[in-house]
Length: 146
Length: 399
Image 1 (cartoon, rainbow over the protein chains, first blue to last red):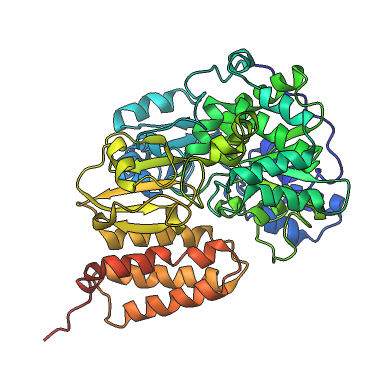
Image 2 (image 1 turned 45 degrees about the vertical axis):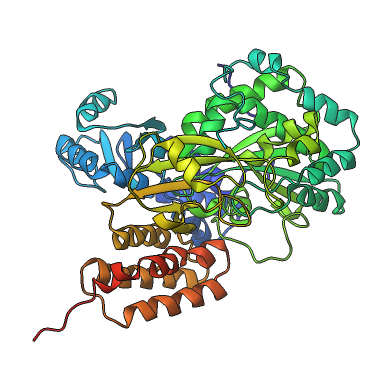
C-alpha cells in the first residue's frame, strides 16, 4: 500500500494539536517541556496549550506503557460482557485499570465507544482494533505486543 | 421492505485497496458527468433529490452546499465528518473499510459544486486502523487524475465525542479544544479559519455519486415525503446478527429488528446516547426524519435488561464527554448521574423523578449545543415509558 506524501504544512495547519500529537509520538506522552516549547514558539499562553493537551482522551501528559490498551466501556460492549474482558486483562497483567505494568510494557484503560459494536466486546491496543473478544483470546493477543 | 443496497452497493463487492474494481462498476463516471455540469446545476440536482444530512441533524444537503457556494470569497472548505462517536454507531467505519472510493468520488463532486479546492476528512482517533486504507484510496484516485480540482487531506481526531459536532470539529482541525461555537454565523458563512465551509457526514457524501449519475428523480422516488432515499443503520446489542443494514427510509423499526434477529425486545435506543428510547409496544414506529432516526444507531435491549442501569450508563457517558464549555450541560449531566445512581442503588426519593424532569427541561432549553440539549432524552423517554422501573427503586421508609 502506498503512503500518500505528506506535504509541507501551512502555518495554519502547524497548530497546537498537531504539535502536541508530534510530541506524543516522539516521547510516548506529552512532557511538560514540550508544552512549554509549543507555547513559546506559537506565542500562546501556557494554559491554552495545557488546555488542549488535557482535553483529548488520546493525549497523555503522564508517561504511558509501550502498548496502550483501551477497552470499550460503552453500552453495546457492556451488553456483551465487557466486564469479563476487564477481569481477564487485570489478572493477566497484574494491574488495575488506569495503571501501567512495572516493565512499562502495557498501560490499561477504558475508552468510550470505539465504533466496533458489531464486534463487541472490543478494545484497541495502540491503533489496532480487536473485536469479538473472549477471555481465551486475550492471552494470545497480549503475546503479540512486546 | 427488505434491505436495499444503494449506499452499500460496492461493500464486500469491490476490493477497497484497488481502484480497478470500483472503476469497473461505473466508478468516477458521476464525477465526469458533474464536471461537465455547472456547479449550480449539480447543487440543483442534489436539492431536487431531497437528500438530507445522514449524521443525525437531517439538514438539506443541497441548501447547505448552495449557502457555501453563494458566500463571498474564493477560499472555501469541504469537511467530511468521519468522527463517528455516537454510542452504537459503526456504519461509517464499515463504509470506510469496504468502499472508500465512493466516498472520495462524493467528495470530489461536492468540492466541484461548492467551489472548494481543499477538503479535510476528519477521522476519529479510534479509526486510525483505517488511515492507511483511506490514504491509499485517495492516492489511487489522485494518480488516476480524478482529484485535479481538489486536495483531500486527512486530519485525525484525538479522542473526543464532542468533535463529531460540526463547530467543535472545526475548532479541533484548527488545533484548539473541540468546543462548540456560538451560531450564527453558520459554517457556510464563516467556518474553518473563518471561511465558508460545508461539513457533510460520510454517508451523506456516499449518496452523491448515485444522485448525479442516475438523477434526482430515481433517488427521490424512494422514502417518505420528507425522508428520501435509504439509510444505513448500525444494529447492536441483544440481537443474533449485529451489523450494518441499509433500508429505504420510512421502513418499520420491526423490519430492521427482524433482519438483525432481535427477540424478546424490551426497548430500543435509536440514535445512541443522545437518541430516543422506543419501548417494545412501539416497534411499528417508522424510521424517518419525521419520526425517529439520528445517525442510525440502533441498540437493542431484551427483557433481561434493567432500564435504570442503562440510562445511568448512558448518562455517565454524556457526563464524561460533555466538553465543559456551558454549565447547563457540564453540571446537568453530573447532577443527573448522581440522581440516577440513587435509583440504581434503590435509594431514590419520590421527589427525584420531579428533579430529573426539571433538570431535563433546563438543559434542553439552555445548553449551547446538541449534546446538552439532547442529553436528557434517555431520562425523559425512560420516565415516560418505564416509570415503574424508577418507582420500584424508591427507598421505603423504615418503620
